[in-house]
Amino acid sequence: MSANPAKKKLTMAERADKYELYELSVQNVEYEVEFLQETFQALSGRTAHLFREDFCGTASAASEWVKQGKAFQAIGVDIDPAVLDWGRKNRVGRLPAKDQARVSLIESDVLTVETPKVDVLAAFNFSYWIFEERCTMLRYMRRCHEALKDDGVLFLDVFGGPESFEETREKTKHDGFTYIWDQAEFHPVTNHMKCYIHFKFPDGSRLKKAFSYEWRLYTAPELRDMLHEAGFSTVTVYWEGEDEDGEGNGIFTPDAEGEADLAWIAYIVAQK
Image (cartoon, rainbow, N blue to C red; front, side):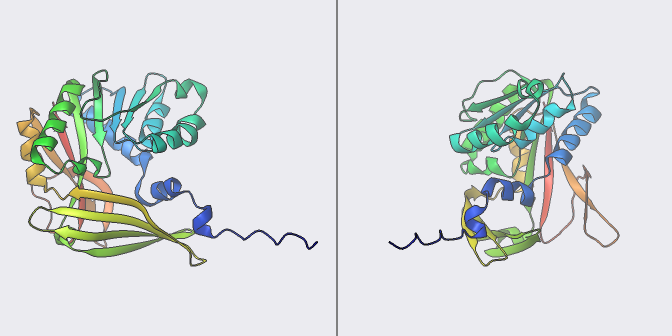
């Protein structure tokens, strides 16, 4: 009897972990936590200790938050049990035991979840755009307002510019893979958009539609108006500065006007 044939060698795509790739491509939680804390301190005059991360996914930001010290606690909320399980194993589970105890992950809908009132609440990576009806978005913002302490602050991100209204692809090379942001569909009557994240590898293999999104592309003025309507007292857009070459420098400061860039990303900071 002949020997069994050798097992087929797995491609780079088959060996890849899409959540790890996602974080390497679009997240910098060390910076995010620093921005949250420094901005909160500047606005409130005190240190934020209790943080809630909505649409937390892998809970990387929540895990990073508690690294600030034993007085810091984090709550992560997401409706997807699979990504929460990954986060428990690969992010929270890799923290020291004393830090793990200060991270609470909740599988729930952010529209109905009940948590203790927090200092800082964040919904990043445009995840909250899943609420395509204005009334639902307003309901979410009111829930955020209720979930904050009296001097609490809500942080959202937003992208825009003419290129955000196009059906287009953008490729970014990273060490060992290429990240592809695919704006596959855009409907100008509703601002509904369908987007995908793909990954391509040096061996030619691909992870197609590793992540899929269906959102409404909201504009900054729309979001500011709704936040005020939801009860927030002050709503400020933090715009990214530029380096000497005209590229983003990663420093976000309050800006009442912004710049007419083809594509931009900013933060919206809403004080209760």
